[in-house]
Length: 71
Length: 392
Image (tube, rainbow over all chains, first blue to last red; front, side, top):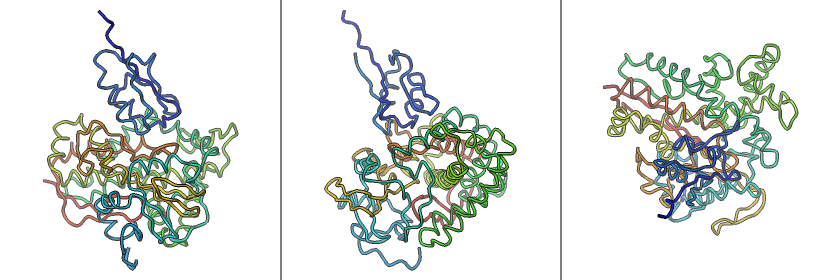
């Protein structure tokens, strides 16, 4: 059996402007720093059941800063 | 605005103060997007207007050719009134922005939510028994004015003064420079007195925070602090007031959306994003400082650009059914708070105020409709200024 694919979220720090949309739609997948800029929580791995939230974080980012990577 | 020469055509002679534009700009922008996505007018000493999302984004990201040193299009260019970071370009912009971000993070704003909720209920208490109200005057405009006064620990009743200055700076001041400079002077003196008082007696408020903040590692000067305070007041009030007003206007004339929010309060955060997209209140401006070209249009130095985030938010290339309010729209990359390095510093505050204002209103008054003529603001912040409602 091949391993099921894992998803990871990533925030491009050069693009993030702190809109906080990712944190609003997927609160467990993202963290904010003291200036309100986002980064992935932990290693960015998306737990089962949160795939749609990860995808919404990507499609709601006004700066195209959120990526969802399939590994 | 009375007495302005009529617009000959929207591609080469547009005027954002024209009564048709003020009353209902959306069909005009839809037409411009199709026929002339980057329009130009000789009015106001020369202004470009981009109506496509991609072009608005390109201008917003290009700080080399498009400067923020002038962010309002006016009839005669006034002396520059610095209000960093909104009027700053890189590299100076960053340090000024870093000062303002911490007090406006989502966590910091969350602490203000109970006061916002209580305030909305106090306002509703004052008119609910009358069976109707002017929701622009008696509700929408009171929320951001009183809350910003609360953040600065200034009397919430000073809100009348703030609204007068903002009207003079952002509406009358577009064509009357004397009124503009008088209002800026009055506002600066008001804040200078508050700054002196906080130097003697610091507290747990935004003015005291700014006085102790570091700017590029140095303490803030009084001028830095006054610039920040002017910015917060000018940028934070009629913008949010307009967003709240437009949202209520939509809910008053769209009973199915209103009833859905009453039945599903959990939908409010998503609905608020859609209302922000459809009725984005704020159009910014840039000054062209170096010749460049976007989407086949050459931008000449010295001219202004109206950076219409509201038009970008209605571009059907990016938003399916862009002309419709889809109250549960899930994918919504809207640009109501701008794009790039000048993203609205107060976006978390504005969102919180908008959510609380809508939630409390539909909770207390689930059935309401328009009751008379609605009037809209003139200039680059769009929202209802008279919004008569009748409650059922």
